[in-house]
Image 1 (tube, rainbow, N blue to C red):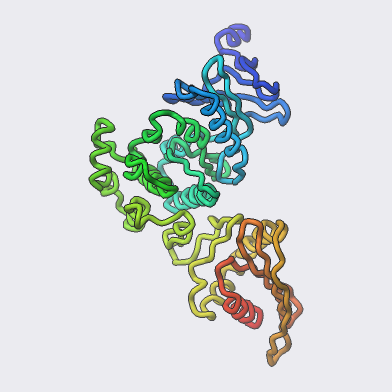
Image 2: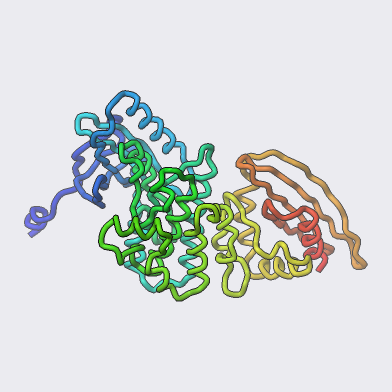
Amino acid sequence: MNNLVSYLEPDYSEFVEVDPTGRYGRYNEVLGKGASKTVYRAFDEYEGIEVAWNQVKLYDFLQSPEDLERLYCEIHLLKTLKHKNIMKFYTSWVDTSNRNINFVTELFTSGTLRQYRLRHKRVNIRAVKHWCRQILRGLHYLHNHDPPVIHRDLKCDNIFVNGNQGEVKIGDLGLAAILRKSHAAHCVGTPEFMAPEVYEEAYNELVDIYSFGMCILEMVTFDYPYSECTHPAQIYKKVMSGKKPDALYMVKDPEVKYFIEKCLATVSLRVSARELLDDPFFRIDNGEFDWRSVDMDYPVAPPLVRQPHHHLADYYNRQYSNGYHEYQKRWAYNTEETHGIELFESRQEEDKSSGNVDISIKGKRRDDGGLFLRFRITDKEGRVRNIYFPFDIETDTALSVATEMACA
């Protein structure tokens, strides 16, 4: 019986191909297949982990050594991208004999965001917002390069999920970069997700924000945008005339619909990933900020920092009592322990009728340009509390809030 089972089931344990270094081996198991790319299960012998082996056909656009050199430059850029919301890119090489390019990336447990969403249809909007923040953090990282790195083909099929961790990462940047070298570069992308300015071949990184808006629409409706159209020419006509997909008018939640429309705005009105990260859309139902989604690499100011000082003190006290100190601990680990430039450190005492409060303030500018302030407060009973404020809160405001918290 065991022999029969082994005969009926294909054996994927043997490598059918090995990369030039001998480190990565490809199995014959196909994980996904598209028009120009096939993804296989593979194995990293050095690390002992499973990886994804992506194979892309090069077609006819490698016509000269100059084309090949530009392609290698694109690939080198991809190898330098390091962010927790960008798919890890391990290695790549061009197979000229078979006219394809192979690149090895990390493997995801739950497939694409589209597949994941279709499997799990009962999802609270808070989970959708959590995914959106992660996508925006990845886009902000890419767009913050000089020059900006533009994905050009963002959609839920190109966003990947580790469902057991709620982790979402942008992928297929390699494919977008490679296909950009084809003679039909202006057609790179998926028509349902392409901003109108892409068709005019004069665009910037904000095309990814438009595509991101379409991704949200897909997440909440389960359908591709413009599913009412039967061919790309119809999509093109609607996009260029400014008509939004029918699915947008099926979105019942006005907050979600408004946020999608903000992403789909004309390019002159469309905002950046950085600005969208601060949008009120990411507040939770009671108006407070969803700290679960805070970016530890690039801290975002909570929306309430612009309120009067006593409201701030109440807010931070409430967050502190409800587990906010856990966020502070994680933020402290991810910011204070990294490299940066010390800006200042000072100490002051605040007199109170019942005793003294000792406050030391430390400012540091991080390597990525971010700024944070740390307040170490020793209250009248000798208890020490560390408070971290995002980069865009005024020092005087932070000091006032910290003092009120310590003296409360």
